[in-house]
Amino acid sequence: MALSSPSLFSAVNATYSVPHFHALPLSLSSSYFPINVRPSTHHVLVSDHNHKWRTKVSFFTSFLKQKGKDAKIIKEELLEAIAPLDRGADATPQDQQTVDQIARELEAVTPIKEPLKSNLLDGKWELIYTTSQSILQTKRPKLLRSVANYQAINVDTLRAQNMESWPFFNQVTADLTPLNPRKVAVKFDTFKIGGIIPIKAPGRARGELEITYLDEELRLSRGDKGNLFILKMVDPSYRVPI
Picture 1: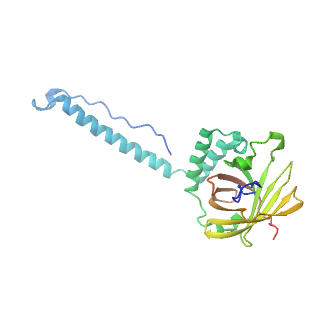
Picture 2: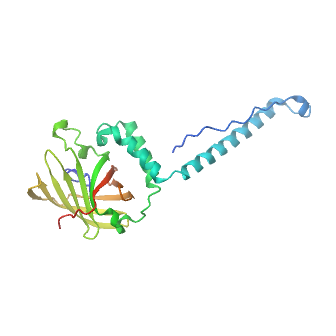
């Protein structure tokens, strides 16, 4: 959660390609058809029929492969895709599109349908990928960018906290208001410059966050500005200051 924008993290803000099945070529010798049937017309009809059949088989095979793909495999693909991207700072538009596509596959098989009712959400999470340029601080020289970003959430107190590491250690805390079992409104209350100097957050420091995938080790969230956040659990016992 960067300290500059109003979403929970930004406010401080298949194509399964499977080979087509190809039918064997058909020989349309005139000895197999009445003499008044024009071979050219029959070629068109048979070709069209075979094309439709191949399309249906290809779609069905793709559907079966997609249905059989479990969360573990998709998670591995996602982590592999983001590994070389420096948390998203080095991602090209094509990289972002690829990551988003895999993320949506994973969101579709989330084991926790109501994350705000799950204690798996509790604790301190490390940001490992985002599309938010304000969080990534891409306009700063690399030496002045936060080395790591963390977000903590406690469901029982409906509190959240965003934290930066070296070199600035900025923090911000927030109150959460559930909008549905997977989405919260966020109202920031206190920034801490350098993790020490408290500053009251302005009233406009608000946002929304939707938890779209959750398990014991990985969380995906989407902010109200359309940004994607991928985080890994680092400390399930962490408590956000009240």
